[in-house]
Image (tube, rainbow, N blue to C red; front, side):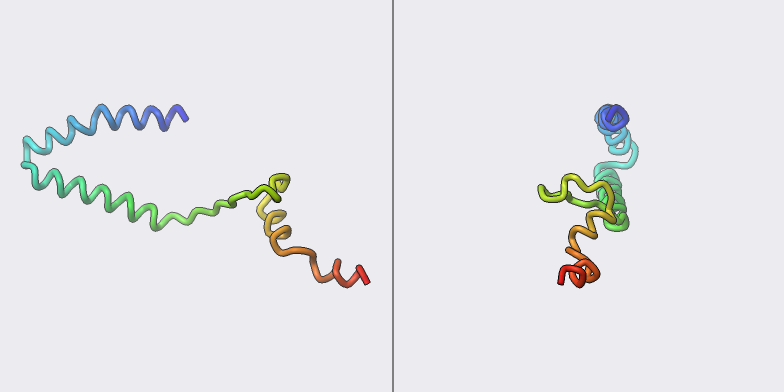
Length: 85
């Protein structure tokens, strides 16, 4: 949490100064173009990353692993169903 806060604070402090320096050196057009490229890089990174996240619902709060969650989602096994007869 602290690293995220530090990154946010540093970007708020350095971002405008870097932007102002870019506008002074190259003009407004290249600065906006560079900003657009950085947004596209972030969108590309988000598209590439595969998130393996399990959203836990109320019925499955006690499960500890993905395997337990998937087993609970699948329902009872055929072996258990055959033993009920």
